[in-house]
Image (tube, rainbow, N blue to C red; front, top):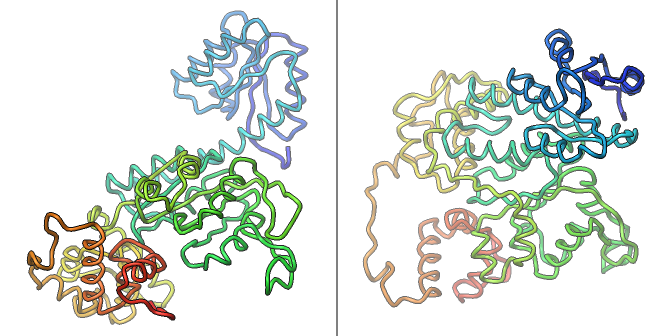
Length: 465
């Protein structure tokens, strides 16, 4: 083992010499080990010894390995089972795996493989214990790690995280801007065997196309004008850890091809370099647009989409999970109380009604900013309506405006004209604040500027958010 493990291992083997030798071997790797001569004796020892791992022979008198596995499951024992089998009974071992065994080894035992298998089990046990702690935290506090919410929508996300985290499979996260996609990615990383290694995040929409490839793959000295030194890219920085690529659809097609190659071959080449480098990185990608539509429009390669979409989850906008508002508000109050040395206890009823009526186009990010400001300006002990931005009170007092046929959408209108009208209306609504308009439209600021230029609306040499 790379480090001493204090996990308890029970060896179940009817051959006394093999049993003693295996027990001593496992102890030499740092485990606490005991042994039993058959399944019946093993069941008796499980109660007192409480092993985390059971390594059992498949064929034994009184109670064989398969019967032991079923008995442990029936009793609800929290153990990971590995079977030892002769070549002739491999079929039975495979059947046992379908019933819940973790893995099997054929005799004679491949010692290095057993050691690697135990290392993987130790990592898995650590992840499972963290997940159990998070489930308990969810029941008691309505939070799952750094994620806050107990709504059915959030519980679905937690289920996918539990499934995806222990693996190295790619994950594709979708959702509007400000919903917390990066926080979901961080939670997956923290619950994975890669948690001790780096989590590296990069926003593809925030980096010019000419520099994005260098940021991701790195570059050699002299690769381009201004490349004075060799520089490591995100793949090198995230080696053995997780790389989070936000707004994946903003990547140029050429960069998408190179990314796909790294995902498939686990090797990359720095910009301007000739040597390939092996890398072990899990990739989690995110986008605030519908990836299927992005594939249709050619902004996202279909082969890259299928490669990233092993696990997929959608983070719902805040307006779809308003039942989580009280939990989120209190979590942010606690955060900013600690940061600003305040002692705000909560939100009064009138202020909470204003928060509940707001549609939160900026999602959780917008709510966080609102509560940060409120905790600073409120003298205490409660946040009241006057401590919230005036726009929240205005929104609650303003009736819904129905667009006239001249301004709205009518049959026969082209998609391009509909998009033009929507962008113009949104910019008018935000008083030409393009950053806010992009959030409302659910696209990145970079995409908004591209659309403005394409539609000939407001081409600018130096556009400002």
